[in-house]
Figure 1 (cartoon, rainbow, N blue to C red):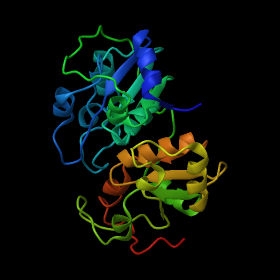
Figure 2 (tube, one colour):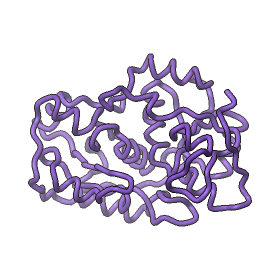
Figure 3 (cartoon, helix red, strand yellow):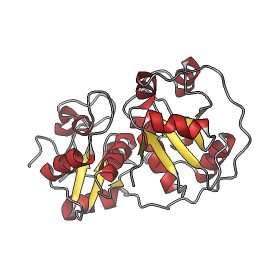
Length: 277
């Protein structure tokens, strides 16, 4: 089943009050998500902060490690999320942060989370309004069950690169080690294959159709039965790539620590140069 929902589909769900909508707008090195939310959001949407709720504090486990389950549970309950209710998450356009939210909620055991394909930009293109009004939802009763879907650690990522396919979703110049604007070391996990996130998105920020996603994945050695992991800079785009592969019918396991965790240990090997494929 698709994890995506269109603007029109979401409008119907909202009209009938059958969904909790979570705003996870986010900009790396930009203004806080709370400011993006305050500037405009979908009517009734509740703000869920990526850095505070969908990740733990940065450190040796990376810039966006797994969140503390109790902190995540408290944040979700404050947004009115229940154990059984449907949830739709969105960000500005490309589902970068929404993909992270989708994956984290699945890791937390929530059975009904989907993503607004194309984000708030798609909502506006469809002619629907945004607001600055902040809702006051009743507390939810969601119970976080961490580990409900698998996750790769550094050892698992290295093993996946040897025995399956580890897809690095960063831009080619970062993968090759020619540029690294954020982390202290440039390069990639040895054996990882570069599939930039831009190759699975349309110009309007929506995901490619499933058949096109499968063709792109196959060109990088990934098929339905291929063991596959995803990695990036800090585990956010890795989740977004896992969402894209999910739409292609391919199960992928994100390496949540990703490059920011990998290079925190100077004993881990670093590869540079072009993709060997």
